[in-house]
Amino acid sequence: MVLGKVKSFIVSYDCLNDSNVPVFSSGDSVSGRVIIEVTGEIRVKSLKIHAKGFAKVRWTESRNAGSSTAYTQNYTEEVEYLNHKDTLIGHERDDDNSEEGLTTILSGRHEYAFSFELPQTPLATSFEGKHGSVRYWVKAELHRPWLLPMKTKKEFTVFEHIDINTPLLLSPQAGTKEKTLCCWFCTSGPISLSAKIERKGYTPGESIQIFAEIENCSSRMVVPKAAIYQTQTFFAKGKMKEIKQLVANIRGESLSSGKTETWNGKMLKIPPVSPSILDCSIIRVEYSLMVYVDIPGAMNLSLNLPLVIGTIPLHPFGSRTSSVSSQCSMSMSWLGMGLPERPEAPPAYAEVVTDEQRQTCLEVLPGPIDPHPDQGTSVGEQRLDSCPDCSLCCHHRGKKNPRLGKTPKKVCRKSLAHHPTQRFSPHGWDRSPSD
Image 1 (tube, rainbow, N blue to C red):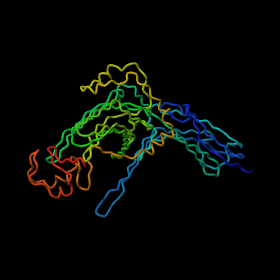
Image 2: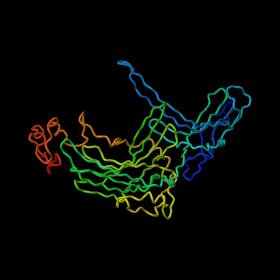
Image 3: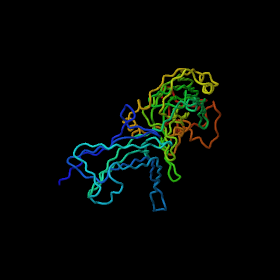
Image 4: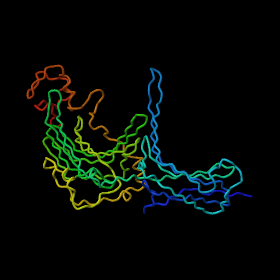
């Protein structure tokens, strides 16, 4: 007797949405079919499925154990969310090659249905990161006598819903900061930054309205900017690994000395990204809006406003509750600029983020352009944290400071030779208009 061959062996899901993307949440019923297409007929001992969901992190660090000894330390951790097994054909034991209890599958296409319930407890959202992931899949195994088992596996997506229609996520976020630039005997006026957004929770596809005021009383040209960052944090064996990546950014107009710029609802759109992951013990995915002032040669002046990227969009409503409205009150008049009373409802998460877009954004986020904006830039061993012309002042260190407003008695010839366009003013070293 000539036995047939398995032409195709796949797992298919019955989707719950119109986009034909297998997306589920805790408590949902996951159903689908194992599809087998054979030429001729085959004899089968069993057809089994194994559904599994887990979060896993892994990274390595190199350590020195002495002057000439080094080793690699591995950090791994895993949390299980789903573990379900079922037998669709035959019996559970398939470790023998007897001819008893075999099932014959005739030539053609055959479908075998399966179904199981996801746990009611909160599940971590599917995610792919640099040092960890959250994955859910169904694996099917076809066992035949005297042959190695055939295996096929297909992943499905789980979203743990985050409803942004809660008082916490509807509350405005705001902050104010000020910075004064100085270096040795040169000082300048302050740079001030105030910013607010209408709420903490958003969904992909929405645009964040940024209300900000930037006042430049320093002697330098500065640039106001805003950026959304994603922070991935991984935990294993008491250690932590953090990755910060840029998601989207905008910039304002350059501000010269004495100028002020106001953002009256400047828009920054959220691209298709993974929702926030806040309930997993070994992986966290968080977002923040950074509104900052880019100061050449100095640490940026920045405000970090926390964000939560949810899956259930904002519901249209007539007016904000009194509790939320009370949180909107600000002392400065510009912070009292009105927010839309009837915001347009953003699209649902599934309408904005396709499976292909989600995978792209999860796997290939742009690299960080400024992961630590509050740290000064360094060139070699010299820090450029306060004055762009620190190198001009360093030759006078250790000497008595001249009073502001008067030219120092001893001018550094080396500095003037290399910087002939520099001059000293009551505000410190300034560049001439030709510079």
